[in-house]
Length: 105
Image 1 (cartoon, one colour):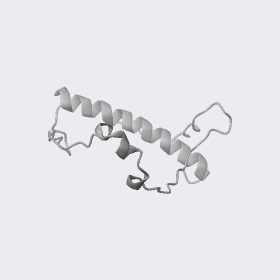
Image 2: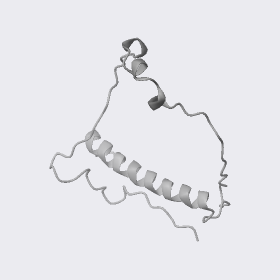
Image 3: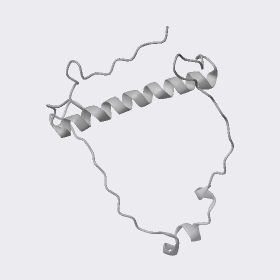
Image 4: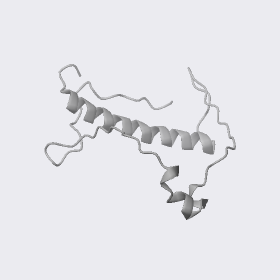
């Protein structure tokens, strides 16, 4: 990717990250359901369950939610990627750029 423009590389990486996240979710679901073997050649998957406290904002009284004393303003920065041609989400990877995943035997 040495010759790829940084904007195109970022777009390509984000597409790859989304694809990898989808694959990760599929694998996680398989491990949770016990459909995938947990012992690999170089790694072992351990599934744990834990309880944790969850804050329920919707249960707060409206008087608290609307009181500015309970709110702070924070500046955030966001980088978005837009297709220049209006059609593609991201440039297609060039030959050799695509990550190859091997299915377990």
